[in-house]
Length: 236
Image 1 (cartoon, rainbow, N blue to C red):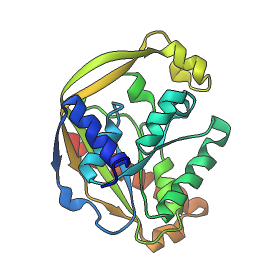
Image 2: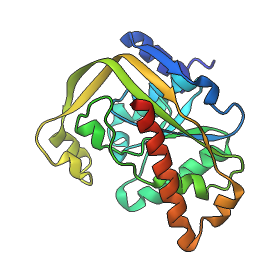
Image 3: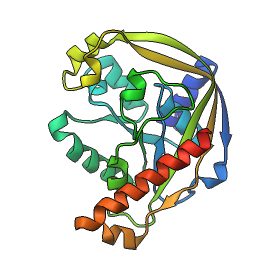
């Protein structure tokens, strides 16, 4: 294992924090095919937890503001993240970077709930609605034998602290409406956490071919709903 790889750094972080990780259904992880990891999201620890559970470095799409603060940007990039561009370029940047990574045989990770559960604290078994960007990516990426791997992160024991005032983040990234409110950004630190691997969804050539015109919308909706339901089932 490369000593400065995101996987190595993730394991070092979990060890330093004393986090105990319990992984279920590891046999469902694709061994040779490229894949997307899709997961629920409540903590800054979710990316390191997923990498340690899947046993490989994962490149995660991150919120725009994480690339605007020098120290935070360095930490995020060392842990494999790629912060997204400002809103006017965000979608195009997401697809371009993700497809390039998948073509290079790297694993890409996405948190479809977005920033909301990070800012508005939720219970470990709760999950918000999914944005559909990951489904569009999976269906439009020119990659054969691609899998989408839904994964559930279920905290069993944790501490909740206050990290930074939301108004400060608003100053860093005025494009995010979630930061335009009083209070603090919560910081969830896991002590014991279950990682439950869902059944992979394999993207077929017929689905890729059907991703055009009016046919695209129901395909995207079906894939999004399936992954959300699978993660919710695992959490319950």
